[in-house]
Amino acid sequence: MNLSNLQPAEGSVHNQNKRLGRGEGSGKGGTAARGHKGAKSRSGYSKKIGFEGGQMPLQRRVPKFGFKNINRVEYQGVNLDTIQSLVDNGVITDTLDFEVLVDTRLATKNSLVKILGRGELKAKLKVSAHKFTASAKAAIEAAGGEAVTL
Image (cartoon, rainbow, N blue to C red):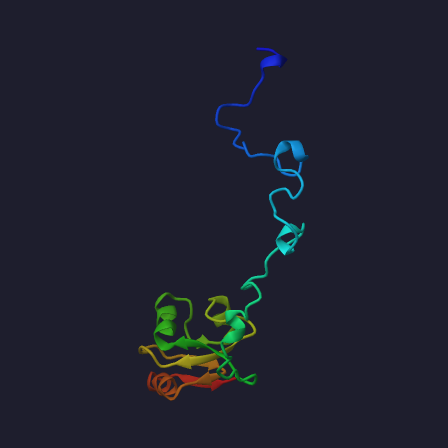
């Protein structure tokens, strides 16, 4: 082996295309296989997403609908069975406050928490949250606990 017979490994080189825009003698000179004029012949051309050749695009033909209330308040829901499982696992003993909910990743630090009534609660707990459903509040108080609205 010497410098005169070095070549790439078998199968490592794929490009056997004709080189575009390298003079008339190459067979792909001049327009470099892009045709004449128009946006597609220019460098830097990229079609916009949803472009339909100048026809009114689908996302502009279809009407908008619905209503988005900008004053809507979103609550992060936490169910009673989730709280009961925290008690069973020994995470909480007597109080469930916002810091515990953030630590257990049931809520984020900027969210508002609403306690929902799915499942049943057996433990006597002091639960602090931003809102309670009627069934959740009744279940907490029936277990001997206290529901504190933040």
